[in-house]
Length: 164
Image (tube, rainbow, N blue to C red; front, side, top):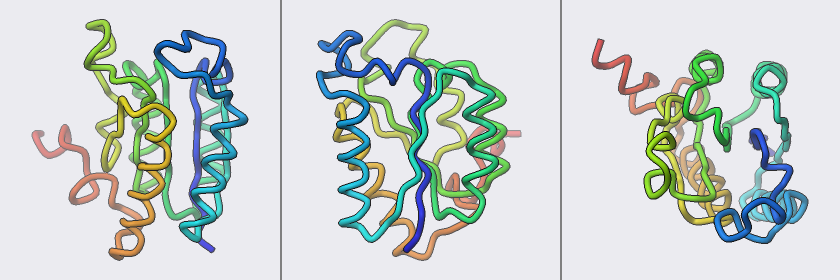
């Protein structure tokens, strides 16, 4: 069974309590159970992690992602500024799907920048908890299509690298 790493970033531990009109009423535990159920139906095993600390997320990814088939990550606010997380995902060279519960482009201007998304094969946003289900399906599809390590972008590089 292929393993997928699922990472929840800062403040996602507050799901169900924090701004439910934006992020929904499901708790992180409920969301993780949905992720595990979907992964099982897709023939995937998942390793789930949440932290409010950038360094802990990077340490977890560096330890757990090697040997995995892909990464689903909701970096939360880290998506807007974390070069360190971007670099980590690029170095791991696995298919990455970034998830956002809300649609950052429909929110405040400062949320429109997505630095971490440049290291992802794709970004799913605005579908609430269903975004995780869509992201897992995308990773399963990448794997069934024979995509593996080195496929974070169309040729394993982000669009920003292609422009330089």
